[in-house]
Amino acid sequence: MDKVKVLIKNDQKAVKIPTGIRLLIRRCCHASLISEGIESDTEISVTFVDNARIREMNREYRQIDRETDVLSFPQMEKEELQHLDPEVPLALGDIVISVEKAMEQAQMYGHSIEREIAFLTVHSMFHLLGYDHVDGGLAAVQMREKEEGVLSKLGLSRGASYVL
Image (cartoon, rainbow, N blue to C red; front, side, top):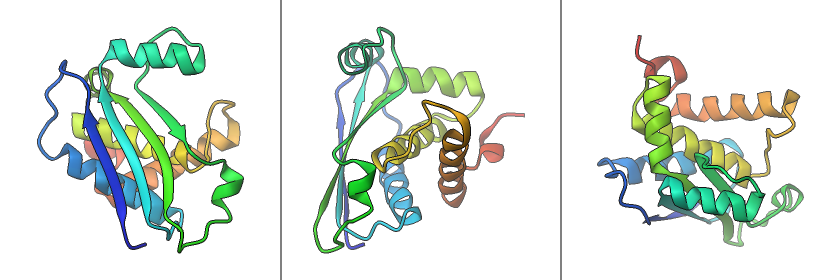
């Protein structure tokens, strides 16, 4: 993999984005791609929004009228990702994170905002890479194991980030 281009945009004013978050997101995207053996140059878009905007998007795209923490908009189906030409650049998709919700969840789970945003980024990357957990079961367990594997490699394992 030569290049991973992560376009990050802040479309909210509710929460100040902590220093280092943009670099952390880039590391999360890169590590997720490496874990899946993606060798193509890749582009991902990440947008920060507030709770009101993510609720609007959740209602519009998923017909669920409530705020959520992260939304993923893949550009390809899982089957297409299995037949990539490493020479052809890959526009993987878009990630939208509610920074307000991430802050709430970090406090609720007793870990840092950095760990929460890293988790949401990796979680969304696996959605962009064709994984899903909606039906639960084995697919959800496999997705969670992959997420935690990437976070551990980045030094953000679950046990290391929780307040005792």
